[in-house]
Every structure is written in C-alpha cells, then in structure tokens.
Length: 292
Ligand code: C2E
Ligand code: MG
Ligand code: MG
Ligand code: MG
Image (cartoon, rainbow, N blue to C red; front, side):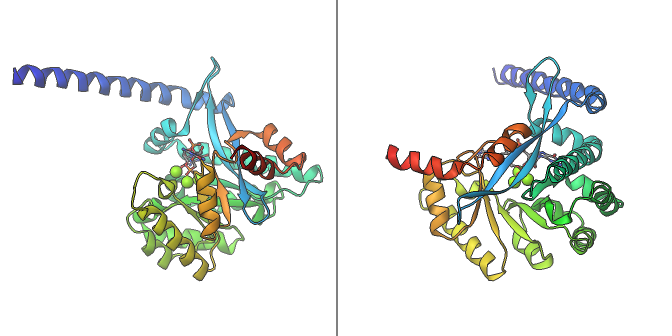
C-alpha cells in the first residue's frame, strides 16, 4: 500500500517535472527568434503621487506576446532567462526600447516623467553594465534623470562589494537607483546601511491583510518613518484596494503603484492617459467616495 502510494506520487512528480522541462525547453528554443521578431513588448505601469494625485512616472514591465496569440508573463520566462544568461540580451533590449520611447516623447516636445527599468541580478554582473547604460542614454540623448534603474534587493546578497561599486558608478553617472522588493530579502537593513540607494520600493507582501494582528502594517509604517529619516522617497507597490491607499496615506507614504490605480498597459494606452491630462486617480477616488 505504502509502496504503491510512493510509486504513484513519484510518477506524478516525474510527470510534473517533465512538463516543466518541456515548457522550459520551448521557452529556450524560441527566445532568440522572439527577440529578432520583436515578440517582447514593453508595458508601462503608472506610478502615482498621493500628494497631488497625479502620475509621476512609470515602470517598464516586459511581456512576451506569442505570434499565435496570448501573453507569457515575465514570472515564467525571466527565471529561465536568468538561468541560461539570455536575460542580459533581453534587459539590454528593454533598456534600448525604453530610451527610444523617451527620445520619441522628447522629440514631440513632451516633458516626460521618469520611467524606470528593471535590471536583473545577472545583468548586474556584466562588467560593462555601466558603459552599456551610459552608451544608450548618450546615443538617444536621454537626460539621465529620466531613466531610473530598479534593482531587486536580493541581488545584493551574492557579491555585495562588486554590486555596491557598480551602483555607485551608476549614481555618479547621474542615474537614480530604486531598490525593488524592499523587505523581501534576508538582509534588507544591511543593504540600506551599505548602499545609498535613491528610492525604496516596498515589497507588496507588506500590504497583505492576511495577518490579523496587523504586524505587516506596523512594519510598513515603520519602514516609511525610517525612510523619512534617511531622506528616501518610498513607493508602495502592489496597491490593490482603497483601504490600502488610505492606510498608506495615513502613514505618510507618498508614492504608490498597483492595480487599484492602473495595471501595466501598452505604451499607447499610457500615452493616452498622460496626454489627456485627465486626473484618473481623482476620478477614481470620487467614484469610490460616491460608491460608499
Ligand atoms: P517587479 O519589478 O517587482 O514588478 C512588479 C510586478 O508586480 C509586476 O509583475 C506588476 O505587474 C505586478 N503588480 C503591479 N501592481 C500589482 C498589484 O496591485 N497586485 C499584484 N498582485 N501585482 C501587481 P510582472 O509584470 O509580472 O513582473 C514580475 C517581475 O518580473 C518584476 O517584478 C520583475 O522582477 C520582473 N521583470 C519584469 N519586466 C522585466 C524586465 O524588463 N527585465 C527584468 N530583468 N525583469 C523584469
Ligand atoms: Mg520592478
Ligand atoms: Mg517590485
Ligand atoms: Mg518583484
């Protein structure tokens, strides 16, 4: 009986593993082709300031649009690309597309808000990273304060000394460093002590309301206060509900990003949102107030 169970579970496990391997192999087989065919597309998710209820920038999030239709989310292909190194190519591609986008807006006479791009931990180890990013902003004549760089907190754990050096070089070149997923790692405070990042993005798990005692909320409030002492702006990510907005407002968190305000969207939708100068956030607030 027991042995039968074991074999059954084992078979199930192997089946699942086989499925994962097939899926991963498909991703690997298609990735180069996908880059050439421009199947990777940029989505933008607005960031809002709670002080004036306005869009103050956006984060670039990559999507893989399959030619046969459908999207693959980065959660699925980025870990694969990080394992096989292809992520450095995709990252560069996304940064270049972002620079082109900004250059286009500037050429049209717009005054774009800053846009942030993600830098994979793998790209961080590219010894020519700083040159690559500086080269792009130079080539497309992008003021460096318009291209912000998001680095995930957990990247620092592997080789803190090398990463600190790279980050300081980027900052010296005029880029702002946003610490992504702050609080998700095991040494968040250590990182803060060692590296003078420019903005904290608090990991969305601190907004969770699954814990009844409000421990996450207390931590969140304390992080915001600490950031104030350090003179660091804070962005809360993953804001999904009105109550979360109210809470963030009450503890003095100024910047927010999340489905409550806007989902990641195609570039044209973002341009429309910004150019219409409609205060979407204000409208939504009012709708919510009426709905109460
Ligand atoms: P991230 O940089 O922390 O980005 C935030 C993720 O949270 C995005 O997922 C975004 O769609 C999602 N999100 C935003 N608001 C909400 C919300 O209110 N609720 C929930 N549940 N989720 C929300 P996405 O686009 O699937 O990206 C996942 C991760 O993949 C990103 O996390 C980032 O680490 C990575 N990624 C995305 N694009 C790139 C890229 O171009 N290069 C690199 N290296 N990594 C990328
Ligand atoms: Mg990010
Ligand atoms: Mg994040
Ligand atoms: Mg994340």
